[in-house]
Image (tube, rainbow, N blue to C red; front, side, top):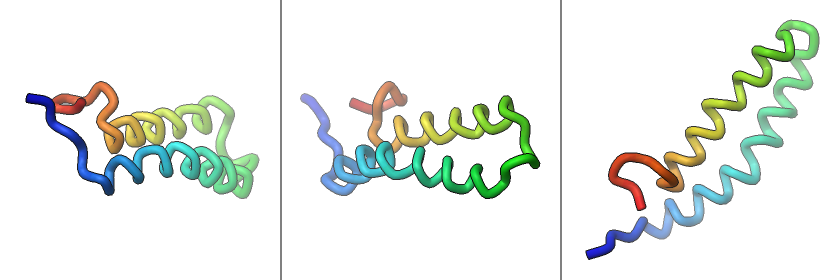
Length: 63
């Protein structure tokens, strides 16, 4: 038996995948100079993992 995701998560995952990188880039643009490039790049890692978990891509118990 295959489990499906609720409609809200089917919509939220791709929406976050489109919006979150732009929002994070916008926020990091305003902190220019206070963080080095390595730390800025490392902020994208939890964002990507979070989007994957919301959309249940490769998460435990996911589809």
